[in-house]
Amino acid sequence: MEVVMATFLMGLAIIPAMRFMSSAIRTGQELERWNQMNVLAVAKLEEQLSIAADNFLTGSDSGTFSEPGLGGIRFAATRSMAEADGGIPDQLMVVQVTVWNDEDGDTALDASERQITYATKLANLSLYQNDT
Image (tube, rainbow, N blue to C red; front, side, top):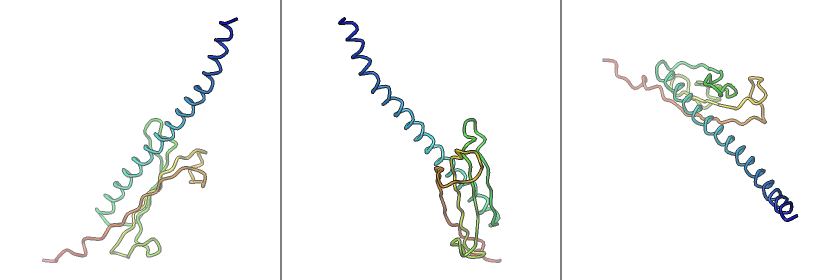
């Protein structure tokens, strides 16, 4: 009888511990996904800044990250000189990158999906070069 009671009490103690562990695992996976999205967003922003610095042309790009296990993470990037976006034509470009976890797989950013957006501005330095 004592063995049965001890087993029952151990079972009662293990159930909450297992719930806690599964919750901790889910939280860890979510934090890892946020970290991946941040790293990918910064890398994509740097890539777009490189394109803008090379030719100072506006444009946009979108797609997914082809790394194994990252197919559900998508991005949208824009390079704009429009005043509505905060740019100045031929002088100041706004570069913006949004990365999101496309949970429903529809390739569109939905309000319920986790997202990270980074934006910066880039001046057209060719305006300051001397013609000699």
